[in-house]
Length: 294
Picture 1 (cartoon, rainbow, N blue to C red):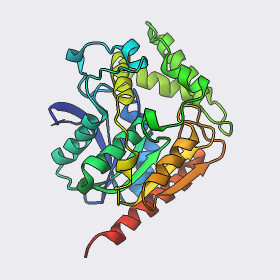
Picture 2 (picture 1 turned 60 degrees about the vertical axis):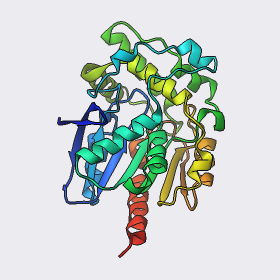
Picture 3 (picture 1 turned 90 degrees about the vertical axis):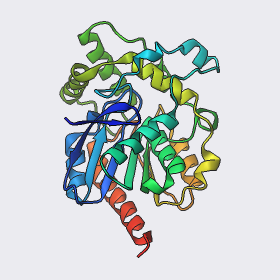
């Protein structure tokens, strides 16, 4: 896969679809690699008329690992005194830097979980670079949000395993916890996905640094009131990590935002909801094109 230098780091990325089509940037969540945006989902988006771009955030996948920052101080972060190696604003600047390096003036931006936080900050800090905004299973900052359910919070505190097999098993255990009630656990599929991620680029220290950045984020709700691009908020009603109330809070903050909730969906984007999600993203993007001058 190609790599570009942007915002003083190397960013691993991949594109789908016609380069002449409107660009759509996918931003993934905490510790997740760009391959968490499934190939078929990206291809289906591209088939609906977009140039789809997915990438590895800093400290995940094959993008730059911020090793000089050292290990995160999780004790300080959890006691209310986070000392981030970087901020979510820096990760938003990474995304914009990637657009710069690709020669893209503005894009439709879609973020999932922590990627939703980053997408919000792209829209807040770099408003002229965003055509439309879609936030999936995300919400406001720690101080403004509804906290995770106990089982969701426990996922964030799990100790990284030492061996490959243990890492794969832990990833599958997390998936079991985060799936919604309408989505049965597919053992073979989840093992394949977990194995692919672990073998490609397992990096728990980077996930820890990203988590500290999330914990250190400054309030966004007031700033979200100034986001004027068409905005779509997607959430599952069974989400134990970022409860659905958080999506509702965010949607209420952004003028004219549309909220799309799915019964039985957890902290996940299951294949059964793809048709509705794809339709909603396309409709949101079309609204943006209507609003463009000329």
